[in-house]
Length: 70
Ligand SMILES: [Zn+2]
Image (cartoon, rainbow, N blue to C red; front, top):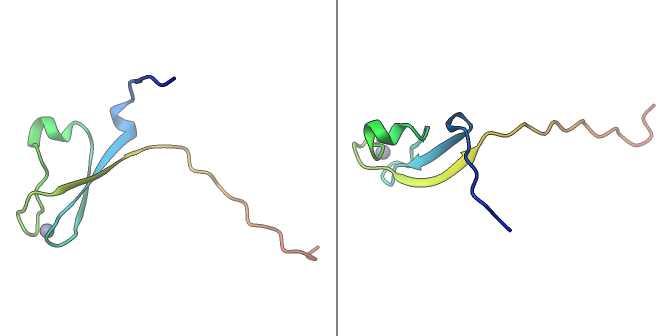
């Protein structure tokens, strides 16, 4: 079973990309309320939505110990 849960605005971000030059913009959810669709600063074109990312604890990998090392 799945359900919808509220998530802190500070823990998500949206990635948009300019179709002209490929420049990306990372914005928070509150951006749209003030500005609408983000516009590329280089081309003045509307950007295209790419994806949404959530903030998560980074998994720190310990370096593998080399075999036969003491
Ligand atoms: Zn552009």
